[in-house]
Image (cartoon, rainbow, N blue to C red):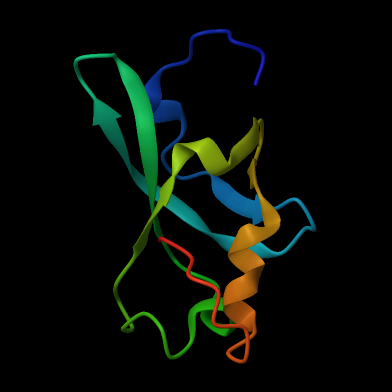
Length: 96
């Protein structure tokens, strides 16, 4: 992120991938802190079924913290922490 202001609406509809290239979902909405005028989270829909299977009801989305975002361009790249969800044997808590 280069610090250049962007219209928030430009985030909606962008695909989200982990740093490792795993598709996570598509931005449906953004969560804002109006006092600080910053984006605090991304609401994702069209989720990667394999990644979220058994954890999120079909038709539901997830909210990821914006601090996980590493780059915004044609797509949005986030930390690969999201991939920990794929391993049910790994009981590490991931707030989504």
